[in-house]
Image 1 (cartoon, rainbow, N blue to C red):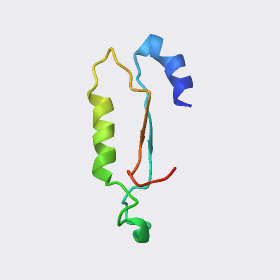
Image 2 (cartoon, rainbow, N blue to C red):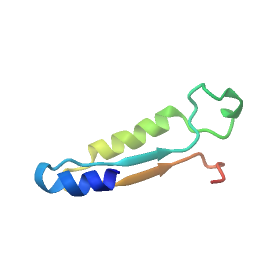
Image 3 (cartoon, helix red, strand yellow):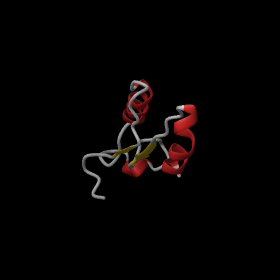
Image 4 (cartoon, rainbow, N blue to C red):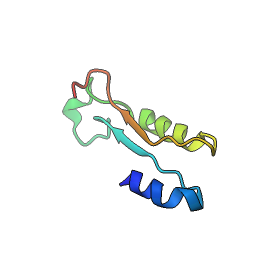
Amino acid sequence: MTEGLRQEESPTSYIRTTNISPGMTATGVLDEYQDYLSISPYSVARAIAFTINESNDAGVNEIVIRPTLQSV
């Protein structure tokens, strides 16, 4: 979906799109997995900030961020 939007809008409006796919994130919803199988919301926020702060001539199209111990 984001790639279609990028191709459609980017050449005329300079809209940049990024698909961010976080793995298990410590949100408080699934407390039993929060010990070692989740990343902090701060880690996801840093990934978002990274894409926003890139210069206008660069597009970060996709970021997959997951806990080190997450298997797949």
